[in-house]
Image (tube, rainbow, N blue to C red; front, side):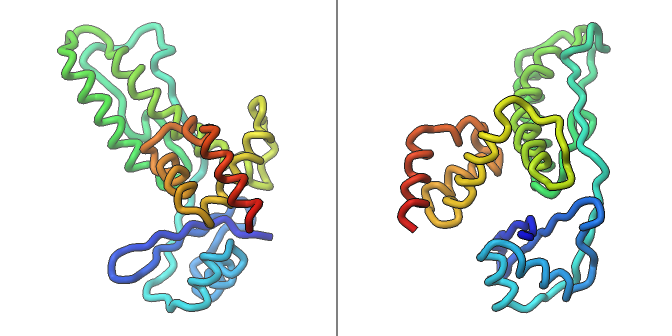
Length: 212
């Protein structure tokens, strides 16, 4: 079984590692267990586990469920009020999208306020702007959640094909810097998930995997 995990370089020649588990397979605070799980991850995490020393404690965090509220579907809303943060959408924190989503929501609010809206009217324009941002985060987060073995759906149309393509892009991103840059721009919410369907990127990923 391959463990789901992520690895990020941080200052001081150090690595930050996140491991995820669900249901009865949640990671615990024991350092040795953490290293054992890292060694069941993809190659970069295994290498770090084998060649680096842990310099801090293992911190655990539990998250109950993802939740989204689509305010633009309401027939009425108080004027002078908006919704931000987890009240808009609470997505699985293991993917590291929370702060980025909050910053992009603030940007959407800024754009709305620059349009000089009436304080008496509902902020429908803001909700349309911010929900485009939430759509991207929600698509990434829920697609990854649906890939977990304990999840049984419901799956959106075309999910299995999309998952196969996403898995191949993930695999190629570990090898090729160009694919990695495009992949990380979507993961870090700099680009829409649609960017991963670019034909040139898919062709490059195919060639990378074929030439291993």
